[in-house]
Length: 304
Image (cartoon, rainbow, N blue to C red; front, side, top):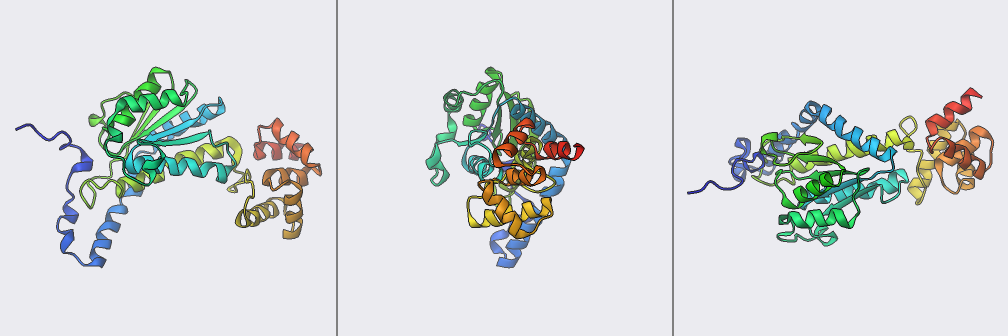
């Protein structure tokens, strides 16, 4: 009898710690899950060099006008779409800069689309549709490492000269495709066998956060540890923007409120207006000289 196709994959193994979990109390089940989740930070620590390599590819691509594209299926795809969707409101970045795609299209975000992940041709076709190019970076996300849709997208991007990153939760020897960076986040067998929405999903979310956040910081969208490229579009963000301005300019809340209003709710413009005693247009022009990087702009102001 032939061996099952995916029997050797780490994500398909049974976890001894949860072997009889169906007999446990609610508290004991929660404790088992938590004990498994506690392993994740150390696993990430051990693969920081690979995450660094991947992040450098993203930073370099964005500096050249390239994009970061996430592609996945199921939980992996949803996490990629989630991370991408949070970049524009958090960092005032264009929605095209970081994009997430899931096998089966947007409807698959809410409803499982059976078989959508099984076509490498569809993954390759998606790359053609979004005009993937040599300045872009594609991160394929597949906990099992064998998702055909993701592999097809990675191969097509490679053929077109783009950079490729593969984030997976299995050992490198199970990966059958060449990529520029392989991030092998081996979280081990899940509490519920094969349920990669658990540890695999958690570590995927953390790694995507790390990469995209670092890329935004290196793009100058953070000053100190404050999101200065914020466009205040709701009450919470207006309040945050005022507090950021107050903190950086050492002014009171009322002054920060006036500055933000004058700057059309753009935080970093308000900061430069105050620091240079300039108009909105003058502040924007000054910032543009430094590609919107507040750190560089502030350094120049201090040198004067």
